[in-house]
Image (cartoon, rainbow, N blue to C red; front, top):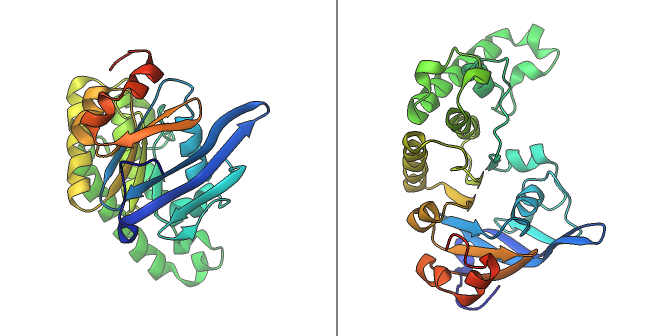
Length: 263
């Protein structure tokens, strides 16, 4: 970890230790180490090609790191499949949302809960009462989540008709069905109109007050400065610096990494 920003050991939710990932000769992540504190909104910024999304993919289990450790509450999750990471309490959104477009908004949410009894063949015959009760509970929770994210009026609409901003709220809704402890947000502001962006920011802040932690990739510096503390900066696969938003924004290394763009 770079000097100047320390996380108390007992407050570490996620720890990245010397994480590396290469694609042929391209070293997309080059020995990156930093912590995400429990209860924080940690920003991850850097110019295009810095390795931010690759870092998200390794944390979320989409890609295997070549080296290093990913510790969630002290347990190494590097090498777990994406579904296993999800079951451990890490949810992830994408820069380009990925709903199941032919299914309704409600149906998209009902697919998210883990350990559903009805997924097992014999349970469909032998435990019908349990399945009905579980499905009713999931449907009730989905309604509550959609009320929270402002999508309740669209619950019976196909997900494919939603706007880009609404689809990002749908992705967040899906994650909330499993009560995550950490949410990875990949450019939540990209392509979202100002009204829906305010709604999304409000939901993030409300979830943060409830104890949910966030690691957030974003190019919208106003949003980063408003929401995030600390801010981690990457460039060319490496960690440049990290710290409080105002300190990071004025750091010459950060300005050099962006060549003055957007800062």
